[in-house]
Image 1: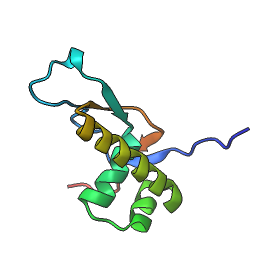
Image 2 (image 1 turned 45 degrees about the vertical axis):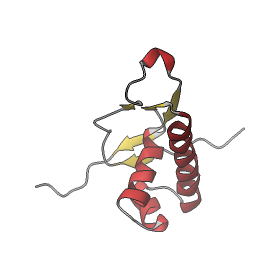
Image 3 (image 1 turned 90 degrees about the vertical axis):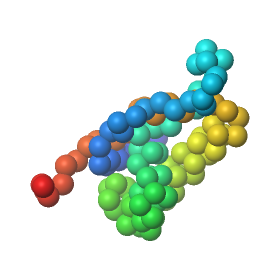
Image 4 (image 1 turned 180 degrees about the vertical axis):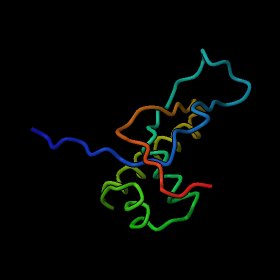
Length: 103
């Protein structure tokens, strides 16, 4: 019996959950689906330029798990860009944990 998946912490759900190539009707496109936890890993490491260890602590997961999320998410995004597919963002094993800091 496999080990149960541990939920990953994300800052918030994305405001935009669908991207598609311009000028191609949706009915002609295939979709590449990326999970919210994969997107969070990409955001922390690639966009916010965090080290993998710091990003894994922020998501409350191990560094190898973060690496697997990154590899999977990056591959899906690259595939969609190269093949002209739409990207749908949804699902995954995650929870939203608010920090104690308030503006």
